[in-house]
Length: 211
Image (tube, rainbow, N blue to C red; front, top):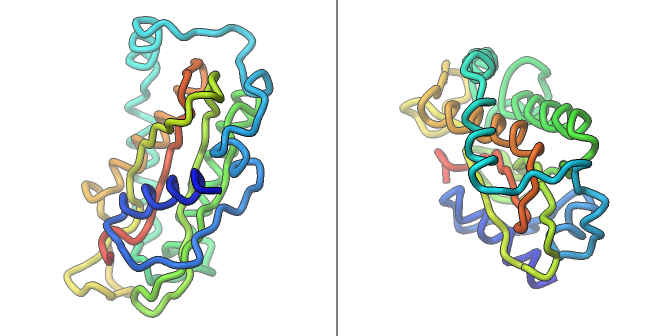
């Protein structure tokens, strides 16, 4: 389990917060992938495309500006994405946006032939009156289970107003860091077409602006 905790520590550091406890991954399949306890053939595409030039050109050609703009505009509709904001509403707050990201990751998984492993990464920390928080991870298992290194691509979906814990204000956060979030999502969508030796984790995280 040392590797799992090391990976989770890296994800937590990426949010610039240092007092999280009870850090868990909700999907057991994701734990197995992080540990390297899986059969790569389960996640290998029918046609392996792994030449660096082919991957680079393919990614460049498949990035959709229109999709990213649409996703950025959609994120804006959640009004307030403070880490301590509403987690119950389906249309407003941090809970709604993370469920939407999870849903999109699941759509990418289905479209890729189940090559992605989707999970929440929960942690406990008192931030703006909320004690339990969730990151959203999409994991693309690597071809080489003997290679224990993991690549992390991360963007944070929380934001804030001038008041660190103001959960009633309008917080668009397009640059900080809605744009980074939708870029991580777009990379997860595109990169499932290709095969990599390393496992890649696409992480959309919370707690940065209040961390």
